[in-house]
Length: 252
Image 1 (cartoon, rainbow, N blue to C red):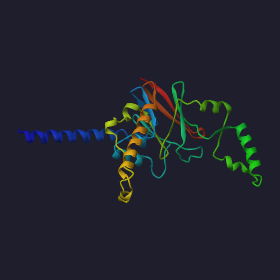
Image 2: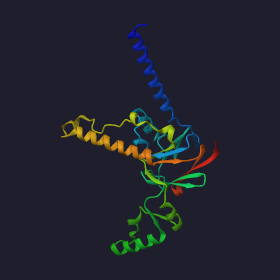
Image 3: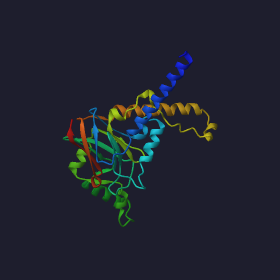
């Protein structure tokens, strides 16, 4: 075998390995149809799936998974995680702020924005009536608020950390299975349309965008991971409480 032939073999082998790795990565997002997943690294990751530097083909697959037969499921499980569709009590999707909490062997992912206690609501309602006396019922000014008990309000104010998804979704799962090395991060260029070519300092805008994307991605990987026991976690969705519960049902 001559040097040229050897180089061709090495390159072809390398390309095959890359394709195999890509295929394996893609399979991480295959739906299982179950209500559980497995953690094997002792680390649970909860973050916006569309800002993790994933290869663009995998981002495309994730986007396809966000819609199933014209409607979204609360939790689309994979073998080591899943996509959580964040909704309000009426089942309407939104990019809500959620807090992460521990409750024994369970992890709670609970919406914790726009909170208000009943006493605070009554106080705000009186203020609204004074400010808008010409409205028969000014309560619509507080429609975005969510009334919770004093105990729940206090507890929800103390999350382990908070996060916000995009496209109404969060990725929940084994941190090692869903992490991507920084050297492999890819980000969609928002200025790839030819119409942007006339913008002055376009390259500077591109570089600033890349820098901000990398800073955001580093922050997600650094701050949104929990140490948890390895095992099988069953998923329970409580829409009336706007909460997803991850319950450890089998410890490894």
